Image (cartoon, rainbow, N blue to C red; front, side, top):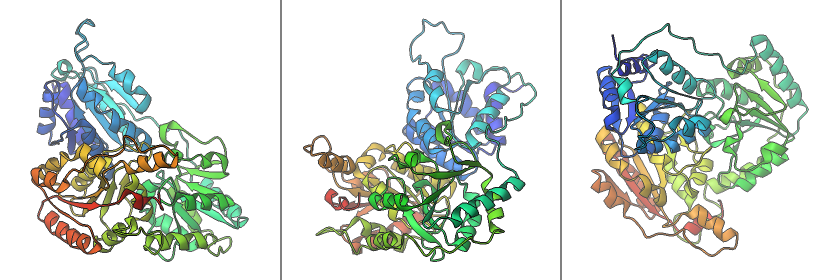
Length: 540
């Protein structure tokens, strides 16, 4: 009879999990060994938060749950950040940690934390795996992670239970989604209703959100090209449409990115907003609560929220196929062309340029001109997230990754690790500020050791520039936001990687070319670009 740990490992492998991320501890050694014997590799990271984020991105790209393993007590507590991120950013993360055996007395309080009570509010499912039917416990957790809206689940397994023989019952059936979606006949009705509403609109705007699955991209693009509708995306939906496709009336990125004043003007001007998979978890302002929006959703939104009015629950694939059979109800002559022209001018670096040094948009421009269109970009949190979220020209689904629902620093490099391991054939660029880099730079050694040769761009302004700008905008003195420089190139070399600094467009071009060559040879590469934080001021 297999042990509980063996059943857990076998069930994960059967679900397509071929890699887990984490840190070891005495209480999870039996589980790690069971995973090894089941053919599930273990990727050792240097912090549980990094392991959880990398796992979530890896799982989403591999179309299964990402799995992070940690010990009890501090190991489990360190998973709070990636679990919270997965909860708000709709990423499929299964966290498995040890816990104290149920047979131990409550007086044994060493490393005792109420783990399930702590995590219950921010996970879709949580339970303790016991010798009684561990198979179904894992199935329930995996279903919670991968059903829409995707999100985190949490399991505990004590070292005592891990070695016990498993008592297997009949496998349970996954529960159905709470949201009943419209069938094909209903989708045709929805398509005609949308056409009717759009026919009456002079300035419609389609907002594409993270609730649209990447598999819908080709159908979505065909509809938007055919109808020539003005369309915007949220940051986590970048790549679902080709932002450089001249046949698509792309307006920009909404959700608190750079030049947000222009993007808010777009949504305020619109006389009809259709939110296709739009989830306001990405929006840091409240306009979505006041402007009329027709919500076209496949499932509930992050944290189990559903709008209270104008909600159409429908399978997006069925709806888009139905829309393909409906002729465009009218012609719209680019109602937001003035804003689009201003955005394009800024993106090309022809306006809002600092007096000296590289303009932030120039950094994006150089990188986009050198890296192939299929490059995966992950960005950390800070002013650079606003910059790349708005101006990086995403052309393919699942090529732009950002923590936007939670907006937690430390995401960029961790996400890049998961992405590179999931898609080793494409370049991966992690964009970090020097503040975020200092939080996770030790994971460069992880990247080198596990074969994840990523390019890391460190924009070094020696401050938490986004907070600094907010501080100054409030008329407060600069305080608690600046720090001394860290030589990221020396850090890279200390971790077995390579790097170069770039202060001009020419130096950045040379550094990117060197980075591409080094990463093809299996060596992660860091590019440090010094920047005056004030250069962000015109666009952030």
